[in-house]
Image 1 (cartoon, rainbow, N blue to C red):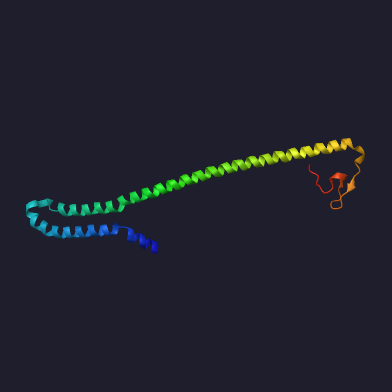
Image 2: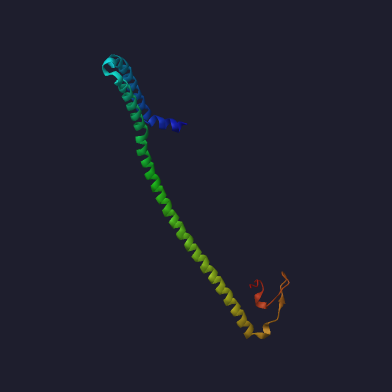
Length: 157
């Protein structure tokens, strides 16, 4: 509520509208006797003076209320465009980081696959070199049969 009051106090439009309304009412007050005097001379065109005063007041009121808003909105628009541009830059940076992370994950998966294949080849090569060391031992935790060099490791498929 305090913010609304401070904005209202800073806004000169209500004061300008009050001034225009006061002057217009004074002009209408002077116009009525003038129209009565000029009625016999001007005839049917007497009503144009009060309509011109009312029309001018309406036009100025609309001009005061809507014209400055365009400037204020233009400032806000520029600020919003700047914020939008900053968000676009942040979005591009984040997308770049995501691409880098995808590459890293892909590289890790490739390396993991390569390490598994290498381990399988090494295991096959060690089995081929030492055919007598294929005695199986029992792992106490799982009850599975494993080779002596494989204790404490899980068997990957």
